[in-house]
Length: 167
Image (tube, rainbow, N blue to C red; front, top):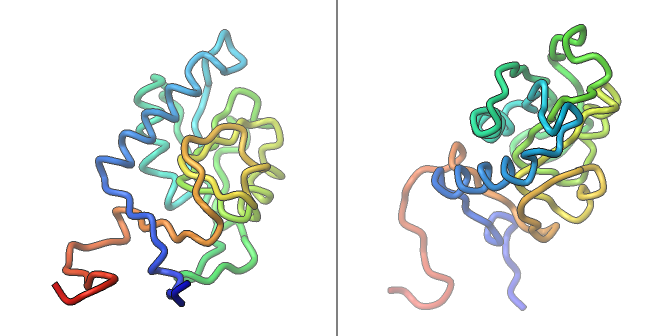
């Protein structure tokens, strides 16, 4: 076994892949809302949930879109999650008929805070790690807990040395 840095066991997601996976999430959610199968609103967990939430809202023709801003990461270090901005709570109520969308659930700590604010909302993520999976109602792809997901908004194109050899 090799000793790799956390970023070396990475799952790199392109914009195309994220779009395909977010559409797959929408397909899983279609027809499963409480209002004759429909959803009345989408709440994106910022910042990572904004792109998938926009795609889900478009695919499911949901026009009410808001955000909840939760900060729990400082670069690759996770700390205590705290809400920086809530959605329009008068419009969201207890969360009935509301989809909460995020890019990833890691440990589930961020979703604990969000679920406390909107206890009856349906939580959907594109990617899920084992520790956080119990906090999610719907997801598309599971990755191992020790995998770091590189999202397209975090990356730039550059050369990367191969694991073995020099060419």
